[in-house]
Length: 233
Image (tube, rainbow, N blue to C red):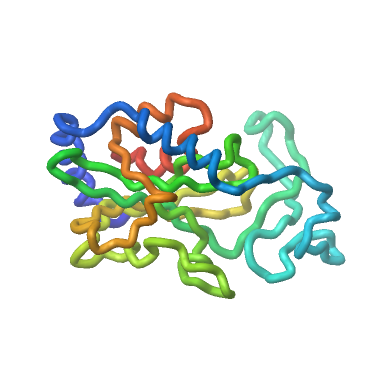
C-alpha cells in the first residue's frame, strides 16, 4: 500500500466534515434519474455468433479482432476436499493482459466538507444502465490512450503533484470466479484545487460520504467498485 500516511489525515477531515456535509442524497438521485431518461443508451442480449468484431480461434478461445479488451478462455479446476462444493470443474473465464484503475477524487470545501467525485457510468449489464461509479473506472489501455482509445478523464491525476495528494493506492483481485488473475489498482486522490480540473457536470457529481452511504442502501444506484475503493476510510 502506498500513501498510507495520508489515510489518517483524511479520516480526521471526514470527521470534521460531519458538521457541515449534506446527508440527503435526493438531489443526486433526481439527477441520476434525469440522466437515465436523457442518455441515449440501450442494450439487449444477442446470440454470441452475431457479435460484431469478435472472433473464435481454432482452439475455441474468443477475442476481439482489435486485440484489445478481455478474452474468453477455459480453465480447469481441481479443489481439495471440502474447500469448494465439488472437487473439480471446467468453465469459461475472462482473461486480460492488464487490470485497471478504480480511483475516487475528493475535495474539501468550507460549505460542504469532504466530497467525492462520482461518475454516472453506463454499462450494458447494469440494471438501470447508469450507476454512480468511481471518478476513474478504466483499463490501463484507456488511461494511456493506446490503440485509438479515448483517454480516460482525470488520468492526469493518478500521480501525486502539487495539486493531488495520494491518500492511498493498493491492488485488489477482481472477482476470481469470473476473471483469471486480474487485479485493479484502487486509489483515493485528494485534489487541493478542483478549479484546475475540467469536470463534465453532465457525467460527474460531487457527493459526501454520508450521501454515498445513504445511496448504498438503495437498489442499483451505487456501483460495487465505489464501495471497495471507499472501504479503507
